[in-house]
Amino acid sequence: MKPIVRVLVVLLLGVTLGLLYGWLIQPVHYVDTAPGSLRADYRTDYVLMVAQAYSSGQDLQTAQVRLASLGPEPASDHVTQALTYAVDHGFSRYDLDTLNQLAIALRQAAPTAEIQSP
Image (cartoon, rainbow, N blue to C red; front, side, top):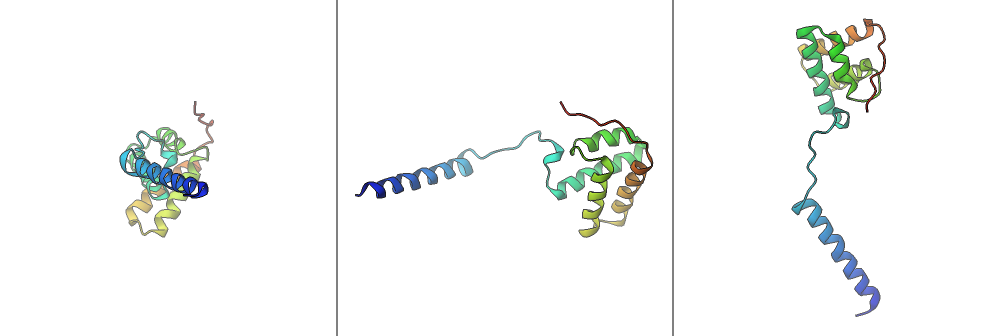
């Protein structure tokens, strides 16, 4: 067997074994990840849950802290993005109203200091 063929066979075997190990034997399991790493649909669900908690308790500061975990953008931007996604994907009128209520409260609130992550 030619040396180049051996190298290619060994390389192919290594890649195959690596993929099998990474995908089947020891796949990555995400645990306790930050909400900022969520996909758009789950991020929207997270913002909706924050909005529902806000609508029941009217605690805007807690809502702002929860939304700050999504990233450095202003909390109102996160809610606006969630509203856009919710409208585009046919969320219920109740969910849209809940998100809108939080968006209005955030726009009317005085600007708060940024919450820094460690």
